[in-house]
Image (cartoon, rainbow, N blue to C red; front, side, top):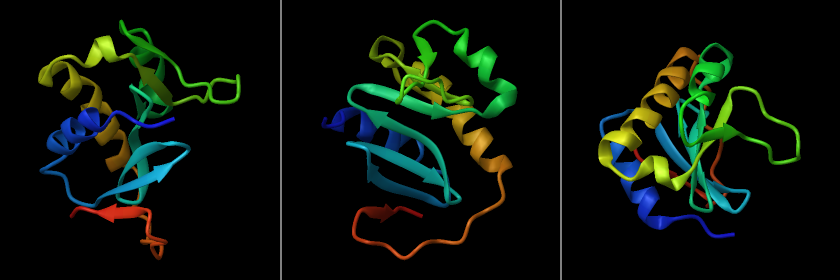
Length: 122
């Protein structure tokens, strides 16, 4: 399954001022790493955000959000956002912000050698 390139460009714009951002293609989608940790990504046309356990229930309760469940079992701390919740720059930013905030609470990870699938931005 291909990911939404237009959404990828919008996320790149939203992350333009962040340091330590890498992009990695995985699972047929695109993941954005901050400080070596998965923060958000795109699976098909949906946004996937990592908010951690403390914000999980609050973010999950928002309109357009649902549990991330690749294997039929929810992955706690990760949420899918439907395209309808991403229509404006402001709405996208409201989803990206908690993912950035959570990634910044994690200790930086050393960079792994690239196998050609990652793209470092800053």
